[in-house]
Image (cartoon, rainbow, N blue to C red):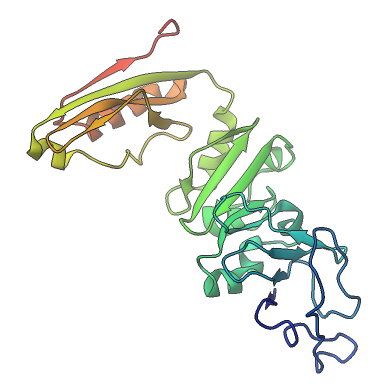
Length: 266
């Protein structure tokens, strides 16, 4: 895989195939556009990244398998690069194919869309996905190399990010298989008083929740030097509710919190 900086090197970055790479092609007058064909003699390959950006990835394109430009679809909204599924599915392993740019431009790529057959599952999570998962069309995977997290979407609902250092392929399969299970929820209301207690109050959420469980803010919050009030809503598959409840109890032990199960009528 090659990364071409055409904003700074428009006359020397692209080489000529017919000269076997010994001569450069001046593309100063080339104006990139989505789906625009590239030059027949450009020595570039599918998956290569062509950048006309002076800052981040606002004007960056991929070379498709049909030698067309595919403009970066920045899903972060912050000028980062999203490598689309139409590109990554061309290679056995997206991470291996883009290893050089991930190393040299570590703050450029925020999302890599993945096919269920991608090598990342064996490389990062221990083993490939089973055929029953690989054949499904209602699942999508996105890997964020910045925080090394995997996001799984089943039936249009995206999961929280799962750290590649904390889950295995069997956890991914468990999440997918439980996506349609009955969900239950409980509320953690907190009312923390006193400066010392407020300083000890955890700013992060528990990381050891069962697969499929997630936590979101519930209602308004109030933060002060000596008073913190609000609530968290924990939701996930019913089959793991006792484990999730135990995690919350352990995490907030010693603080003034109340944990109540949410009923269908509440």
